[in-house]
Image (cartoon, rainbow, N blue to C red; front, top):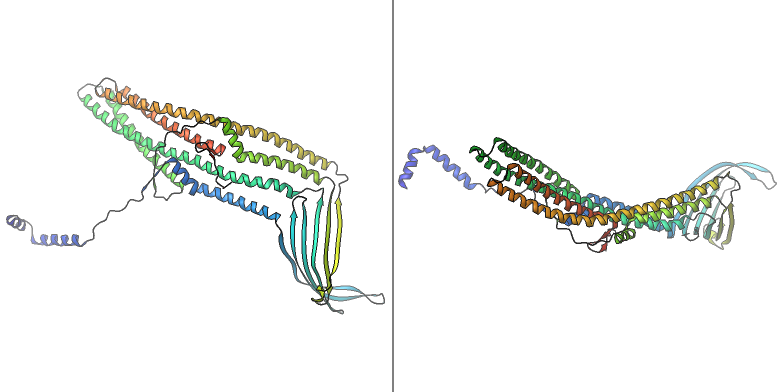
Length: 506
């Protein structure tokens, strides 16, 4: 050791030794360098997890819920029409100045300048009567008039209570038809929300498989690069000893270059697909996504007729057809009432009084009654009324025809989607078997090529068929799960869970 130290002192200048010691001291006093954390952890998602996350927090789900909330407020406003309403009416003090004619005691008339200050206020409680279309009301009012001029005076008028009824006869009852239409509209809004959530499921399923297919393309391309690199190395050795022609060597090199190009394109595609899914799920920007391969399709036995029955029971489209029918009948009733005899009965009973002071205006009130009937009957309209009624009836018949056709089309879509789902499950099983066979065939072909039993062209053909079979299996999985959630959208029924879908607490 002493010899080594003497050797160091003899070969290294003293100034450099001092710099080295200083650097060592600085390194000892510096805080340890910590490893920087990753930008974000990878989020692994299964298909059902992605759909549940999207239905909970995605922008599409938020928009659907806000639209339903708007429908809820509209329905609440409709229901308030059948509850009593309280209102305060009045006018602020108003001033009127004019020259008025004044009749004197001897019968002559004198024009005098007068000024009046007046104000009034009333409170009213009103209640609609949906069965008859009438309105019942109770009011209480107070008014005051101050007149200035040659004859100054102040007058109070009170109506402590007035009860009245206004009842249309032979007229269009809008409230009655609202009672038929508005609940339908609200139920349609509830089911529309559920359908919007089912649409989210279909959309996320498609985006999910876009990512899964892109990931599989990366895996396939990476595997092909490794295999083709080995084949190219083997081909170079065989070419050097003259066992293969230059054309086979160039073909293996070209295959390697194509695999490297496919890997580069697949990496870009998977990043784009993941970003598209991230935005659809409303995840933070730095979130890395890795999808978990979907499970095998469940064993389902779906009767197409049962699927059609669930669609008729749950879909908003069938409710909307009913609403169209009711609307058409309402339009006919409105056209008939507007072009026939109609009347309005008004009846009031109350108390009133007037005096020069407010207290006296409420003493010994006198009764007041009012009753009147107004009517309207078209005598001759040059055929306009008849034409309007016939137009409304023709529109109703056209609506019924359109409803029948639309109903058949909706049933047909559900029926064949149920059949298609059963066929797609069989295709998944066939594609899975084809994938296994193609993979095994490629392994056999690669082993035979290593010993020189087959040509490189046959090897690459087996490789292409292996990749096509793998992609075919993934596409079959995608078609099945997309159809599975599409059938849920068409029926609003989960055949796997055996329950109707509901997103609005219906």
